[in-house]
Length: 175
Image (cartoon, rainbow, N blue to C red):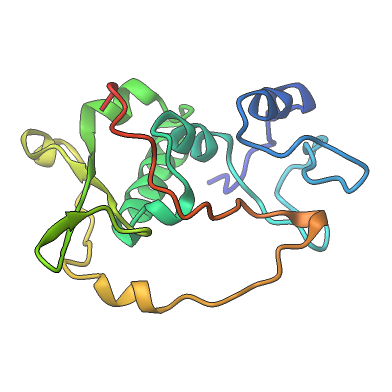
């Protein structure tokens, strides 16, 4: 079994993510690097491995990473693994929409429904598709994860997405 395939991501494709606002523009600080024939990921010090499809999915739904709850991150990861690792196809967005719905989850605070600043996007397998998808054990209660945050330096040479503290601008019509 092949664990990794050579990346097909090019500087041009990453430039497309920059154009969509999904990556910082490339400067002398070298915010991102396109692999050049690497057979398996071996990121230079200070870099991590990321995947195009993950950035594109977040962009499609107008969400930031902290908007997802832990189960949502697990669902995205499992879907990408299913496509890449088992079906040997790039993650396909129409297939994603066939299996999943993305929902805004509100919380009641002092009797008023509000959008929380983190973890308010739920990704759910369509109930009519449960028997067509792999069984994934998800936590039923993950409110305590909201207490597990900490500070980390956001270095210029490996910039993480900024936390705007803002909910996304309404419900996109594509949901």
